[in-house]
Length: 147
Image (cartoon, rainbow, N blue to C red; front, top):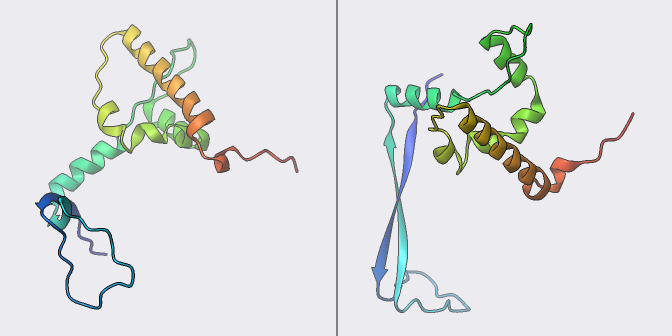
């Protein structure tokens, strides 16, 4: 299957003066006049190279797992990721960290000391509690019904 990857760009321009309507039948109820200034949006697309697609895929596929080290519990990275991906609640709860508006602000963080890592984990937990209690829509909190 062939596919093409494109980027969609929006250019917003400010236009001074009234909005001039095009041809056609006038509306029954005239719209309010835009006498001072208004904005117009023009969209255009541009193709994305294979290298950029690969880089974006690698960036979107990278995520951080934080765990404690317990004596006697040996697990390799691949098995840890498999176990993590098998937990739907974790994936759903932390989806806001992986994409969306917070992605650009949270992804490129480098923490060098254990206290900073612990602080960031604490902030993530606080954010998850706020998300789960206030922001998450009611459909996410359906009551559990025993069979």
